[in-house]
Image (cartoon, rainbow, N blue to C red; front, side, top):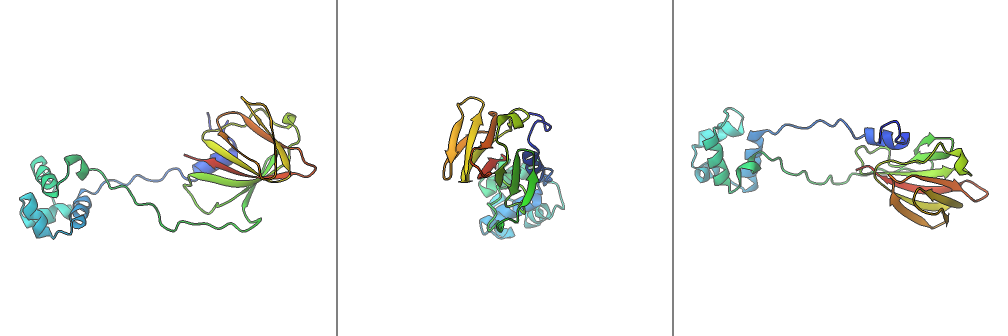
Length: 207
């Protein structure tokens, strides 16, 4: 799917999490981290690896580039395989990441068929895109073909009633409290069937 084919709302959300720089591995910091994880002093770690304390200190402070033999001794002393010296630890999950969107304060994104209110727009690099949508369309004729994009999608009817059209299934009538989960790469469109515009909650995966 090209960027042009992907709905602009989804494209904007994906772009907000792109271009994060890849941090190069700092070998000295990695060795220090592994040593401290074992609660070892420089002296203790150097003894375990069969190195001089000054040599280990220089490695940790990036004052020397260790040879293969030194790296092998370090790995053996730390009780790990060589590849682990060059593998950054997995970052812990961010604690306390949170965003609150007050009623009717989300960023709006209007199309001829839907009126979207983006939720949690203060957070970037989200795994999901939550948004509330007012369904303005009343007929499939109002759409320029199917909406489809990568990922999976969850739809929950908040008010009114809708008809969910999908590429491979018969249309589904849905009312308040009904929900659907589907593959978003399958063509899909939603129209209101109630007198007033229906409101739905949509959650789209961005992975």
